[in-house]
Image (cartoon, rainbow, N blue to C red; front, side, top):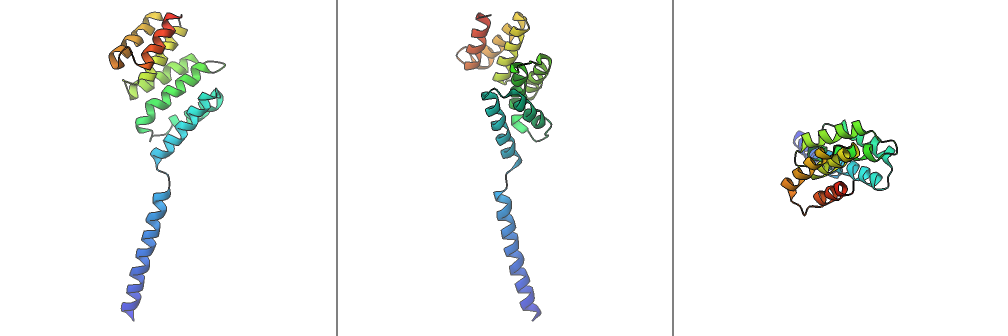
Length: 154
């Protein structure tokens, strides 16, 4: 009798464990959550909803699990600060700096920091970013061409 109970207990615990493992595989990982939040923030920026993108990105920036997305999050946050109807260029600069600390080769952060320097009238610094982009990605990269055009048109 005890043998039967132990066997039933063993079988039922195995079924429970299997059900539990299936449940956890359907839950979203932290990395997937960060990607989904980033995609939402990017969509908000695309539609020029900078108030909302800033709120979302500032919340995301507080996370410790951004991993490889940290530079992207701070780059997009800097862009949102810069393009807002009431730009906060100091916060944009700080965000770009954090993005570049997280990934010194982040092309978008170099491009946008160069654009910020143009806005501030610091053309020498903008040209430094252009040279950095040339070194990192060449003169045919989209980021290089966009910053070059912005410098040429300023």
